[in-house]
Structure formats: C-alpha cells, structure tokens
Image 1 (cartoon, rainbow over the protein chains, first blue to last red):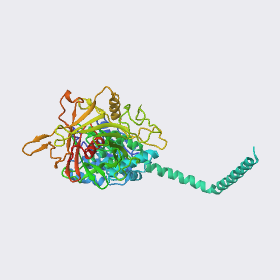
Image 2: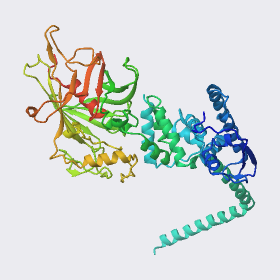
Image 3: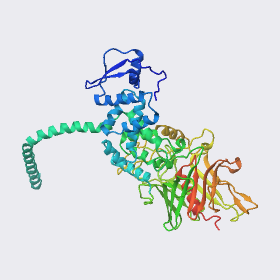
Length: 159
Length: 407
C-alpha cells in the first residue's frame, strides 16, 4: 500500500493545512505523507503554522485527505482498497479535474495514477469529435489536416 | 470618368449610406440589449473558462493519459482509440505521434503510415489476403487470431485494372474506393504485357532526398517537404519484380527476383537501417507545402540518415525466392512454411535477401516475405523488416498475376 521505505509510526503529530478558500484541516502526519510534498516537509521539520495550499480548494482537499486516510490505514485489505478507489474516482468531470490537479500539485503518485486512468477510460471508445465534446476542446486543425484525420480514423475503424 | 461610372459611384454611396443608417439604427435599438450582452458574455467567459480547463491540461498530465491509452490499447480493434486521440487537436496529435513508435520498434501497426514503414526485425507480421474474383479485388488484413483467417484488421485493398499492354493493380487505404484518383490511393503494381516483369510504384517519394528516375515524369530531387503543384499523386518506382522459368521449365518452381530500389542492401546487414517514410503528404487544394503533419523526431533522423545514401553507389536490396527442395517420397517441391501455408500452389513463395550478384555470395536464411494459399480465395502473407506492408502486398499481387509456370 504505502510506498515509503520507512514506515511512519503514528506519533500523534498532526499537520495543519489551509486550502485556497481558507478552510483549515488537521491531518495526521502518517496520512499526510502520502503526498511527497508533505513527506519532504515532515522530514525537514515543518513550521507550526498551517501550510497554505493556494492551488487546492477546501472541497477537493477534503476528498484528497479522505483518500489518503483510507490508503494509510494498515488494516485495510487490497480488495477493499480497490473497491474504495473505484467508487472514489467515479465522479463527474469537474470533480475529476480538481482531483487530478490536486494529486499532481501535491505529488500523490497513487492518486494521480488513479485519476489519469479514469480520464483514459473516459476517452476510450470515443471518436475524435466525441472526445472534443466531452472535454470541450477546440478543433484547431486546418481543413486539410482535418481531412487527413478523417481518413485515418475511417481506416482505423475498418470496413 | 464616364457618366456610367459616376452613376455607379453614386449608387454605391447611396447603398452604403442606407447601410450605415441601418447600422446606426440597430446600434440604438440594441443599446439596452448590448449591456445585457456584455453581462452575458462575462458570465459566458467564466463558464467557458471552466469548461475548457481540460483543454489547458498541463502537458505532462496529458502525456501521462495518452501514454496509458497507447500502452493499454496494443491490439486491434482497440488500437483505434490511439488513432482517435491523435485526431482530437494539434497538441494531442503531437504528443500521440511522438509516443507511438514505428512498427520496426514497437511490432505494432498504428497509423496508416505504418503500412509504408518496415516491419519488425525479429518477428513477422502475420497477415492474410482475401480475393474477390468477381470484383477483381484483393483485401489485405492483419491477422488478429492465429487460428483464423476471418478475424483481421483491414489494411489495404487492391483492384486489378487490365489494359491492352499492361495490367495495373491500384492499391488503396479504402476498401470501398480503390481508384487512382481517390485521396486514399497509396501506390500501384504494374505488370508488363507478358506478365513477367512488374514495377511497384509509390504515390509519394520513398524518403527525403531520394533521386527519382521516372520514364514519363521529369528527373529531379524530391524533398518530402515540397510538393510540386503540377504533379498529381506521384509515380515513384520503388521495386522491380521479375519472374522466370527455372531450368526445368514449367515442371519446376519458377524463379522470382525483387529488386528493392528504395532499400539499400546494407539494410539487412548488422547495424543496417531501412528508409522509413514518416508522413503522408497532406495534399491541399493549392498544394502549398504543408506543415509537417505527422512528426516523429526519432524517425525523421533515421529517415534523413538513410536518405543520404545515394542510390547509385550503394547496392540495392535484392530478394529472391528460396528454392524448394524436391521431396522424393511425396514427389513434389517443398518449402517449410511453418504451418502458415496449407495448399500447394505455384503461387506460394518465400523471399530471402540475396546478394545482387547471384554468384557473389550466399543468400540469407531469414525469410523476409512468405506468401501462400490456405483456402480457395484466402492466402497468408507474413512479412518483416526491411519491407513494409505496402511493398509486401504489391509483391504478393504479382504472384497472382504472373503467368509463368502456371499449369
């Protein structure tokens, strides 16, 4: 579960975090170190004040910390964890985006992987146009390039 | 100034005045509305910003997602998802094209250009060809299931066009539209009148800097990035195939020779490379040199390097068919097709690399192309580096056509 080489004992020490919309969270060190950012801070010795996180809002941070809590639990089985993850990441696009960005910013490898896999799953099975519509991406090909893309995709779908 | 032109000028002025009037009127009319429009657009802007956040995904995250897709969709039909991603927008395309490696490296066919690139080095791509007699059309598929010749990914189609002094096989990416004028035209195979000699033509230059000699078009150095507007889909001869009777006449297996003009003989030596096309030229209405649409940095370097080998001094790769052995007990000529060919036919063959001067040395053991009958209208085709699916298909088509040694 945990990828850290030295298992963190529960020292009871807590980290204080502050989201960009000024929500504060207290979280045990053993849970917080799922994030590489916090891991380095803890190893280097943190300040007493709450750590500001200007790139993560309170709602998202709450979710992320919930995930970290679950994944730091030594009693949970791999099966239970997989089930939890499947449910956790089954969210709407806006929430998924926020989770993806937060996991990236906080450098939480497992959560980032989970979110990326979910995005990949949302893309699979769609045509280029459907992908664009799902993610509201602009088609910036020239008409000639668009024609090449059309030919490629027609061939890929096969007769 | 003539009277007519003065009147015309005045008419023009009146026209613009009335237009202006309309314009002014509508501005007044819309004043109250324009404020609302401004408000709506600012809300719209916020809404649009939120919605397009995916369009601004950090490149490393987008790359992570696209790499996952490319790695997991490694067989057909799911591999179409890789092609779909490369068709979303320019940034997605650039990343996906950089991730996807050529068939030689990845042992996978992905984009249509894969069909013009050398196959894998240490394994064969197993394909099959289905013949439709009535429509004189042949279809090439990548085999998806070893046990079946009905489960395949469509690759190329070819249609036979018989002319008084020659026969053409038009080769296309589109199974429904197999014509020279089609935008999916890849190249063709042309036979001479007797059906003893064939030339494979590529619709575009084999690689950068190649010197092209054509009989009917002008001789010039062709750069991949430049396309002369006056030349339609090109006609670049890339291989010459010839069939001969062997010394036993039609009682013995025929002799087949393929001179691959676009592949140096060194390609099959240790450390050798084969030219690799990296893109289909995007044909535009005005035929201006388009932006390189299909960019692959690693492949471009390879192509550039091998492109510098001059066609004159460097020997070309020659493929010859492996001589079958006479099996005394079975009283027939035998080749070991490793189970991939099950019906005896004079069309069946295995091609190996051979020194240009036949007397000069031994032929290689490695079978580069293998073709043979497994059903009434079904044939297997296995190929590998240094030839491409397109070249392999064209060579096999010549085996259908040649009349040499056919009982």
